[in-house]
Length: 240
Image (cartoon, rainbow, N blue to C red; front, side):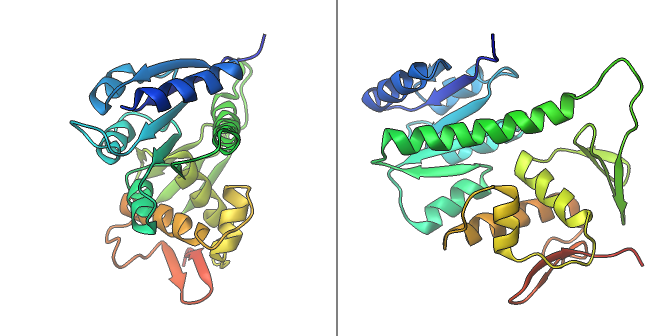
């Protein structure tokens, strides 16, 4: 029997919550529900594989809920919202969200987004857990003051482990494996998200780069590690 995916739905609208639950259960996912962010934060656990999160809820917004989730978990977060401005999507990504779907949405599109996030996250988790009792050769990527253990998917800044989301980690690995090589925003998106590049995809990459810089740069406003070249893209600085 395969792994059962655990989905947490945080949504205050009972009709939407029920519709999403029925759709997820139809795919044999195990579903938990929460009517607001506070309840959702209590229900999330290490066994949660994905969170479907509304933005506009009473008490605590979806953005704030996502920020709190990110303090303890890298679980994929898919926002469902009626807020369709590009600035709203950026707020969701800055809060730590992985994807953003605007209401009204088709169930087919929701299911496709959910499966894509689960597929990427489960591959990431399996790589992190790929250990046997036989001693394995650990692989390291090192540059500047950053070290990455690619067997454990762990990142160290000045010898102290730091917490990155799945996408942040993948971007960092891509750039650090190729120091000095410039990757366009489209290159990064198609390599990391494994999806066709759309006009709005550029903002998704830029937001993740911004979040990553906040975690690894001494001065994120004046980055020395992940450097941008105007009109071309991003690269990781070579050791000198």
